[in-house]
Amino acid sequence: MTRTQPTPRSSATSARTSALDAAAAPLEIDPLLDDPDTRIIVCCGSGGVGKTTTAAALGVRAAERGRKVVVLTIDPARRLAQSMGIDSLDNTPRQVKGVEGPGELHAMMLDMKRTFDEIVEAHADRDRARAILDNPFYQSLSAGFAGTQEYMAMEKLGQLRARDSWDLIVVDTPPSRSALDFLDAPKRLGSFLDGKFIRLLMAPAKVGGRAGMKFLNVGMSMMTGTIGKVLGGQFLGDVQMLVTAMDSMFGGLRTRAEATYRLLQAPGTAFLVVAAPERDALREAAYFVQRLAAEEMPLAGLVLNRVHGSGAARLSAERALAAAENLEEGGIVDQEPGNAPSRGAEAAAGSSPRASEAAPEPESPASDSSTTAPAPEADSVTPSVTSVTTVEQLTAGLLRLHAERMQVLARERRTRDRFTALHPEVAVAEVAALPGDVHDLAGLRAIGDHLAAGRSTT
Image (cartoon, rainbow, N blue to C red; front, side, top):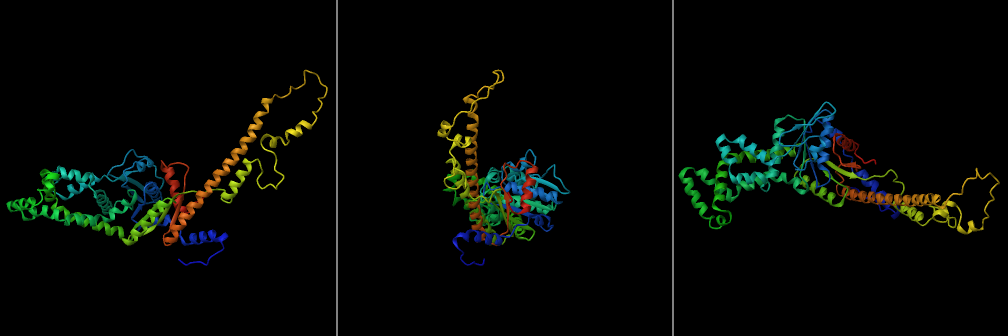
């Protein structure tokens, strides 16, 4: 990025902002969604930044623009199903009703155990598959062993892509840095399979027969003295039985994981980093950008979610606070010294107590007692005094709220500019903060419109 010459302090901030805005190219969503060569979009980012909503909005917009889309969420939260009007999601894609346009939208949620079961059933004969599925160690492994979710995500993505039933697959990843852990799945699987413990357990299957069992007994004798006391001999037996049964499957698991990894590097894949305009979220976004670059993954850009705006941005926070203080002190904004009226009811009445005492009361004209209007009671004047005071306080409060909003805007702008200064090559799309949560297709369409616009306008 080209460095500019120092500017006077009064204009440094505006000059820096305009330069950074120019450096951060707008992220064009519609061309990305319309491109038939784009087959996979992966949304990643830290927790709580709106990845699930962004993925769903992209799916809706792509479907209504004519593509056949499936949205795969790895996040176990139910927000995606609720926003699409589906009671629940599982490992089978379900069509979303109410999509307006020539395309189709399907949604599903990764069921880690079911995906693992499908692999076993597809790559083992019936008897061996039943032995594996009934194995206690397999049941623990498939239900939540470390790294299993990431590998199963890779497996399911590979299955969806291989079917070629959808024009576009949108992936919603888990929160935080684990969102990119599935990139390590092939390496972790290889390390697991190449480990000494696994190779030792697989050796009997390779030797075969009684010789294999004799080899197993010799090998196990080196470990059961310590490991067996902690884990139990039955556990080691379950592991050995599982590894033996899955021996023929391990090569296929690794091959498919590596193929999916290469698929993520291919030109037909696009990664979108989703973040909020907050320091921690953008720090995580910077990590994702660096990691994707290191892994040679195609990054499409950054979606900056929940960006605040104001329809009265010309009124600065400083001027709004000054006006609020002036009102609370009984003054008038920008009035010349010496011309400020008195406070409260005196200001409203346009007179002071001393003036009212000096002024003579007007004589009432002679009239019939039946037509003379009664004098207003003191209580009837009170509402007007209270009303004037309430308006002043309300106006001052609104000015202070506006000042807080402008301070938030300035903080978000500084945070965004810091990110774009470090990563000027990353295209950015801003999505305005909405007044409420998105819980239906109409809300997802609104998010899609903001994404397509690229810049927050409210």
